[in-house]
Image 1 (cartoon, rainbow, N blue to C red):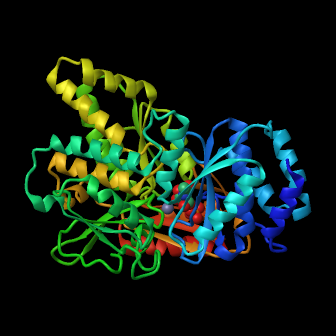
Image 2: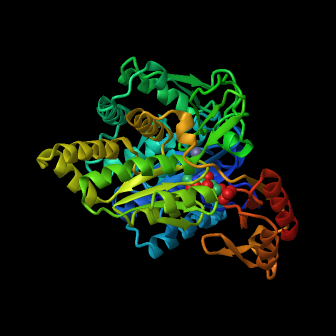
Length: 529
Ligand code: 16G
Ligand code: ZN
């Protein structure tokens, strides 16, 4: 390690005294002006991680749906997954080290993680459209170079695009080409192949209004448009030319407030969707003729995809194991529908993409979605190989056609991480193939009324949870109080958990009516203090 270079460059990216940050569920997130030293040091860490695993590592500068003034950074592991949990601690140590301790901390990480500093390092960089992102990504480069790493800066990309690039690079192109053109070509080809098999006509079906949260999704969707023929009618709103990122728009705003975003005029029964600021989440919605707003969240997206895949899997008759992975936030009626009507096994895990992704890897076909709209589908290598083989070898027409659709689904879905663009195309293809309107999709089941609250407490870490965050272990007595409150209402459920991204405790409640869900959430929030 070039100690002189490390000293020189870390002095250019000083750590504000007394500032401690943690690598949480979504990496580091904070006010942008507090992050320069963090991104520099994450450049160092990405180089170390790359040397440790002898593969390209990704680093994305974004704070997703947070306000424009915030920013964040997270690392992407070789197959496009989230950074391995064992390294999250190293990230936190490195970010908080005193300047004169940096070299020591790096040496310690090298020892603990068996990193050979003489090895090469390769890092892919991406960033969102925040005004602070460009400069922060320059600081990332400084960090990589101090440790002698190579880098490729993709500039403005969606978070899932960066995950995709990293995966392509490390699988020698098996997953696709590690370029934006490669991404657009792969997805658009699979999409066109799929909808070719649709018998549904009527142009109105294809119109879709997309709120891009004034973020990078707008740029990337516009770039992708030429790859589609004219009949794909997507209309981009909140493209970032007029308003601020995530301000009164985007997937998180729509989900949390259960109302339409600003900047998008919705006519009755028009199909609309919202991306979040870095385009890794999507929710759909529409307004009915009476003017009522209907949200179609991640749970209903998972349900639609599961119905479609289950039908195809039945046709190819391979006994593939399929399951849906949710979190405690999944609407109770979605879980009920999946288990009881669709008869698909459902698993509940802790909040955070890495937990869902990990669980979904246990199945041949693992569908995972958070209610907030982050999700994807994972296919096991064995299932994928078999499906591709059926496409070329199967004599039975129906079976072969089903395999062909599954193959296109495999190519259309970004299996590295939830991807708003890819999910949107998956959903549009399924709606077209099944001839479903947005209302019919929404009517699969009715969401139980629910309420999400957040409360500030002195120390949110006093709350410890178990059973995939559905029960509180500490402080003592809290769970008993919640149990007693839940008993007062019908079809009710409630839980509390410390947020992994904000200094708050989150409370979720659902019940038979909105009044009861609100009351239950409120009563639980009082019990937390
Ligand atoms: C992050 C997570 C998201 C989770 C959310 C919960 C990733 C990429 N993103 O945005 O999955 O739903 O945090 O936030 O893992 P919370 O802990 O503040 O409720
Ligand atoms: Zn996001």
